[in-house]
Image 1 (cartoon, rainbow, N blue to C red):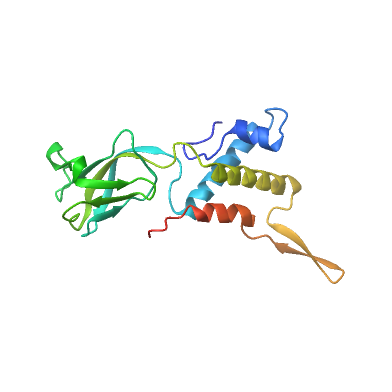
Image 2: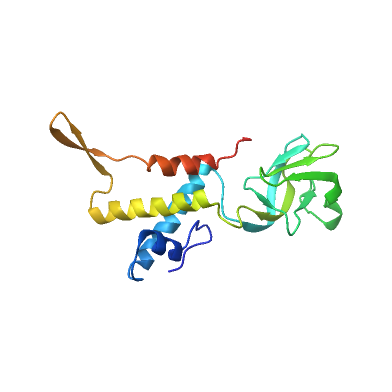
Length: 193
């Protein structure tokens, strides 16, 4: 099994970071990498790893601004924008690259003049969105979360934690992720929405 297209880290990185001495656990760890990466995408509300879109449909906002669902926008090759209320998207519906500004880090596109007409799926985006190189803090959080989940699964205490209070110990259900991981995943949410 190899990691999927959304993987925020690799087997080799996890192996080195968590001290695996052999490839015996590779399939299980790759499953955890994919699960943790899906969690990060869900918590951040977007797909984080870069992917090429050839037919991403966006609803026109009636303003001069579009906010793409995934970002950053990879500048090379250049993004292409088509606007067509009939949703045929012929070559003549492509906007000239000089008619808009691309704010790569936020996933925002602004027209210099005019507005993106209001409509459902009337804008087509062709380009690459997401991180080509996963930021180090995001990859570290993914590795940390893989290690956390591996330990929970191996200990047989998945979903449980022990709480001590005044000389007694009780079991409670463990909710969520380590706070450090959750904070990193949440920091990748769009600030524009």
